Length: 193
Image (cartoon, rainbow, N blue to C red; front, side):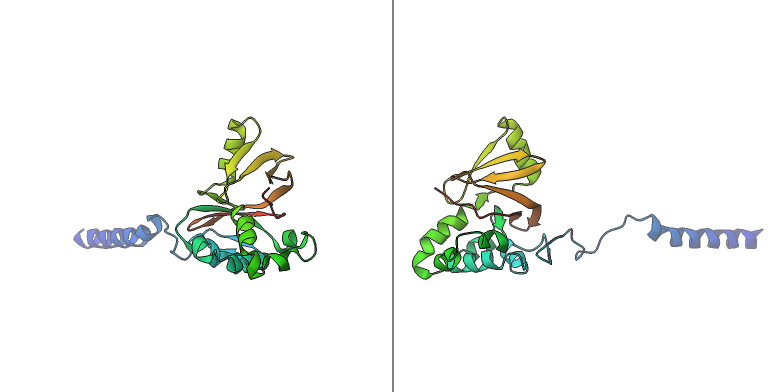
């Protein structure tokens, strides 16, 4: 009986030792992050706005503009910022020669004004903007870093950002989370008054 008890105790101990790792909660490795693909590249929540944006093939014009305006350090900073990031296609829709003109050193002030018009202080998700739209009776107004406001509306199931001139940009990829904010990808360049 003693030998049988020892065998049973050993079997039980082995079963518990084997089952313990299975019963323990699964912990994802630190490198396993929730990412979104933007411009063919993963956007990592542990990286800042610039560290991610430079990898998006759809945002090369925006990155060049941010560099020309001297805003890299700002957008690598603590923030948080919500950036409404126009794609290359959005910049291509501007009148011919506009981007080239804006990138010239003598137009740095105008370029900075346009770029900071695409940035709102804070980390605003699509759901938070939607809540502001509901609370505002169908629209929300948010002050940009540039100083003027952007208008937000929901129409046809889409989130729209409306600039001072009344032009609309659709949020095409929402909630691209960053360590220092969030990127909301848009399909049009917004222009202040």
